[in-house]
Image 1 (cartoon, rainbow over the protein chains, first blue to last red):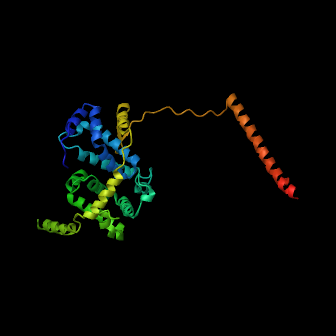
Image 2 (cartoon, rainbow over the protein chains, first blue to last red):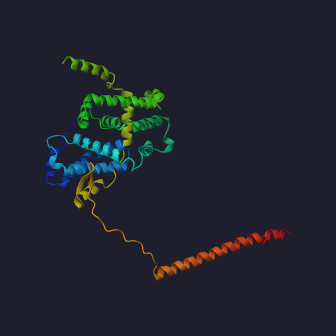
Length: 197
Length: 124
C-alpha cells in the first residue's frame, strides 16, 4: 500500500492517542473515515450498520492505542478491523436487521438517479450490483478490497491473513460467478465499457 | 521430500486453473459499480457521536463487538390509569358531541331514504 507522507503521521497521532488525546483520534478519523465507512457499506450493504462499524472501528483504535505499533502503517489494521466487524455483524445481526436483498434493492438505485434515467446502460450495472450482492461473503470482501480500495493482492493477503494464492483464487471465482450470473449480458460489455450505450 | 514436491506440483496444476488474470472490461465495470455505490456521503455528526461515546461512557467488549456501557436508567413512568377532573370533563364533552353528530347522521340518512326529494315532488 503506497503511503503518502502526511503530517502529522499516523505514528505521531497514535503516540498522542496513547495519552488519551481525542484530537489525535479526530485527525485519524477524518483521514480514514471514508475508507472504513465505504468498505463496511459495500460488505454489509446497510448504511446504518456501516456507520455502527465505523464507530466501533475507531472505538477500537482508541481503546487499543497502547497496543498499536506506531511504526507500522495503520490502514491495513483498520481494514482488518473493518472486515472483522463486518463478519461479526453478518454472522450475528443478519436476522435482526433488514435482509441484504432488501438493501441491495435500495442500493440498486443510487441517489440522484431518477427512474427515467435508468436506461439500458444501467441495467447491466444493476445486474452487476445484484450479482456482487449475491457473492459469498469471502468473495465479496476480497472484491471490495481489490476493486473499491485498489489494494494489491499482497496487501489483501496481509489484511485477511491469507496466502496470496487464496486471494487470487477468491477473486477468480468471484469474477467467474459474476460472469455466470450476468450470462449473455456480458456481450454488451465493450459498448458499455466505452460508454456507447 | 519427493512426496512433498509431488504434492506441491499437483497443487500447482490445480491452482493454475484458478489464476487471477486481469480482464480489463469486466474489472472496469465492477470497479465503476462499486465506486458508484460507495460514493455516498457519511452520516452527519459521525465524529461528534464517537467523541460523545468516548467522553460520556466507557466502551466494553462483548461477544467480539465493542459496545457501549449503557447505564441503567429509571423505568419510564407508566401513564395514569384514571382521568383527572378536567380531562374527564373534556372526554365527556367530546363523547356527547360525537354522539349528537352520530344521531344527526342517522336521522339524515333515514329521512333521505323515506322522504322523496324535492325534484321528484316537483316533477310528479
